[in-house]
Length: 321
Length: 203
Image (spheres, each protein chain N blue to C red):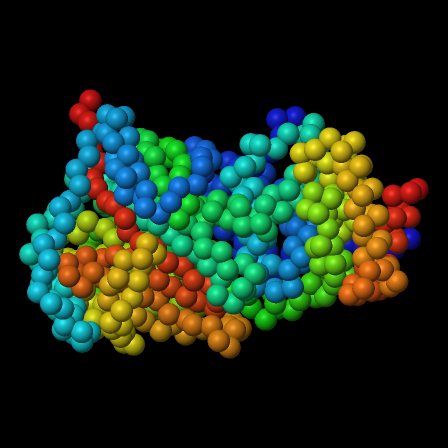
């Protein structure tokens, strides 16, 4: 009798297993089980965001939300002009890095869709809390919030994040270099980001086909989500403007429908990767042309599109014992 | 399966790996019986196991097999209902969640998709049946689950599953019969699958 034996797993299955195990390992410290509640409309988003903030406050944490940047003059629609104006607006901000007993959270709506598979072209979304660390400084924080995704669902969220020198354990891998290790001038910052990119795309939780330019662009985009001092934020804008292949798109829309200016980088598929002929390979940072506030990212690779929109942020401070 | 179920796999990478290796091939086949695009199959496989991490606590050994439970998750993933779990867990960075396949991966998935073409054809033919009847027939005939396991997947009593199975098979025979209603296409591969399964069910 012949017995059919499954072949050993292929590279894809092994890569997926490694990714999943990393997620499982990161789950051990957190109870992230979602509670299903009825779907809600996108219009409810801001109201529920406010509820989340109230919930954070309700568990005894001090919450401070940075003020909005005042609207600036009409934007320039050349890349250099726009980014120079964005840098000037950033320098005018009075923002500090989080202190040793603080963490920054960012609420992000994510929308995922397949552009090359019409039968699966559903748009989904999620909301996450990100807690950003500084190098060598840690804080134990419990955040209890109630989140909602504009297009459809809400859930109770409980995260217990223990931030350490190696980075927030919420994340399966590194997101960007420690904020207080980054220089506030464009040339040194550019050098620091390329040094970081030299650690490899995988180190930064990106697929290995990304080039150093792609990684620097991505790290810079991630940095724009964080609470940066004005000079550092200005330097980030200037580094982005100087990257090869970056272009300005006058009209872009983020994951929650806000209009902005797109700062776009074309990505190149690596050898051995088979993209669909019609697939777009781009990463785009979306910036509010009135305030130069970072709105979100839109990335499309080989028929898969990820969009994110920053929908809220703030500092969480552990109360004194 | 330990008496406490699968709750441990959500926090123990080694236990999760064992579980994954036990079932990843079956899940890939399950999806290849329904989807013919290798990249989509790969994404869906990932989504199923992300959803497993989220819902491992919900598995109850006394209510059905691991595989049946996984098939239930895979059905939900296919329906789009569980993809948000994967999204939330993947929300780790710009590129997370995008799994680009190299040529070898594509070739292997295409082989698997080709191997499941008869079952996929049958799955498509059955699309016209009422959803509840089709679900039982699909799990038993297309995926090879025992009737009681299919009932567990669907959260219905075995007796109810048996009734739905009877109705579905009766309707499916009309669909698959070359002399059936006008406009229906005979599906030789599907007929072979149906016949084989009918024999198995009768024995």
